[in-house]
Amino acid sequence: MLLGIVLLAFSLSACSGSAKTKGAASQNRAANSNDSSLEVDQTGSSTEDDPCSQMFSNLFVKLDTISDGNFVVTKMHKSVRDNQTGQQMPVTYATLTSQGKTVGVFEGVYYPLGNSTYFGFADLLGAQSKQLIVSETVPRGGRHWIVDLSGEGTVVFDSYDWGLGNEDVCIHDYDDDGVKEIQLAITAFWGFGSMSMADSPMPPVVFKYQPVARKFMPDVEMFARGLNGIDDDVAAIDPDEDSDTETPGQYLAPRLDILLRYVYAGKEADGWAFFDAAYKPTNGEELKQQIKRKLTGEPVYRHVYGMPALPRPPIQN
Image (tube, rainbow, N blue to C red; front, side):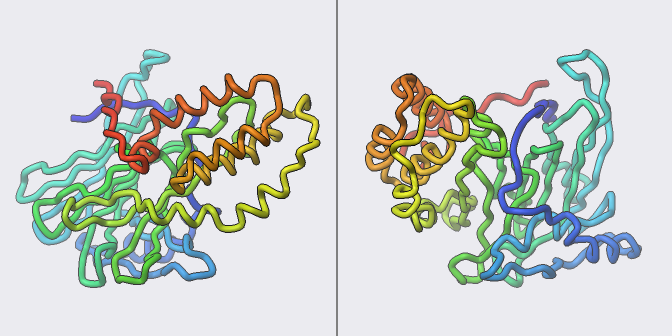
């Protein structure tokens, strides 16, 4: 059974704004129902104006148990030891059973004041499909799963595999093929160097379902969206800006943002050429090596450039 990872300072939402209140209507309907077998809630569909108007949180229900066919999802409670304080802390997690047999346990994101576990059904793989979505969250962080219920309850997405821990997940059918994509943010550079959390660039990453692999995988082609308007953003960088500033994080942030947009779009050489020219402080070479080390360990970057995946740190028992 998976036990604790403690997340203390982590990620912001992948898309602007919190959508937890958007699911209130569906949550209230579920809370007033005596039937724990729920249909997929298709409310709050994304629009072109706001592709992240639909989030996982739109589909969560206020029930401790829901079911679909032989599958039963249950919210569980227990206490685990906080490795920092040695104190016991209350946590929640979820289990998935089929015909009395446990086929999935969803846990591992803990916080000294507890965590939250949410679940619901979605139709991500087509209008007639049904998937279980599970989120376990703490302030500014979380872990998210998608489980395909058409077979044996196969996990087709786990945000931990990609080192991503946003509080919510954006849902949108970007290519209009009837199968929805999901979007999170890469948080590897959150608070990097001298940047504040608010200034830190967090490139969005879209995951597209791959039927052969039966997994949601990063859609590399979608990173090209990050190049939209980049020439104007490069031109807006003032070459005469004082690099010896009292706010070095605000000096670094726009330059790192442009670099990362190039890098994740597959134009790494262009990105470094820009950064070498635009970043003037004397620590430029040292910072450049720090960025490269950070990228080398970032799972999505490794996928974009065809590098083998690194083992994820084990969940502590």
